[in-house]
Length: 147
Image (tube, rainbow, N blue to C red):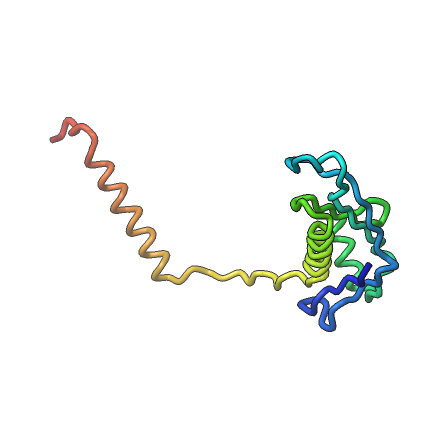
């Protein structure tokens, strides 16, 4: 088994390498088509990682735990892959999925939106369009008694 490498990106400037000893791989039978080997091949892969052992700063750890709060079970992150028929390809897919999850969870939140006011011209154009539309609709009704 190889180490899991999370490429450098926002929130992980130097990247992250998770030793293979911290990863737990489990194999089981995958559902779906597979021909004669469907009941014999354990091609589904579950990759499990204890996030407490990751070498992270306090801020990174807080971000990771907040982003993955719904996915963590007893502090462990589990990713499954069963879309391929070969176990080897599912192992690669599970590693890619786990690396992408970690990278996305470690990214800092985007900057807060700065509130702006509409310009005077845009407000006047909007109100003018509303007036024109109201006049158009008012002209559709039956003529009043004064007409």
